[in-house]
Image (tube, rainbow, N blue to C red; front, side, top):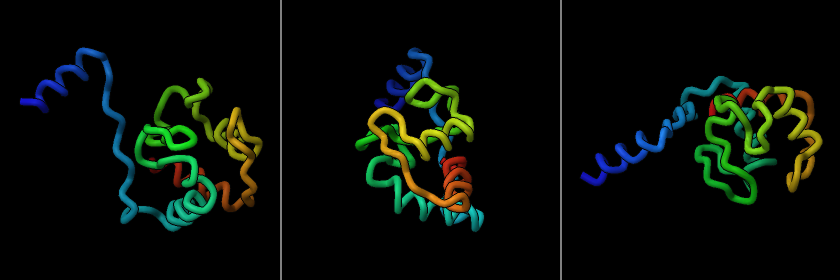
Length: 110
């Protein structure tokens, strides 16, 4: 009964559930490398599979939303700019070109 009430309230609010993240068991080698980059550089501030924030916003479905938390569209170019140069409280992240490509591939799995 509680589940039905929750479903009804979500529908009434106009919210749609976010698509699930790709299971790690289905990652390509590039996505798996990107997950490792995420763990090394991003996980201390961002949860990957929820929208709940840690020190920064949760990143579930980041590339599938109309806008990032900043309001900007989640294009690879915009995400790259945010990673490399920072935005707001987020500091720039020093990653190689290969790590960046792998990280972007991983972010598309979320």
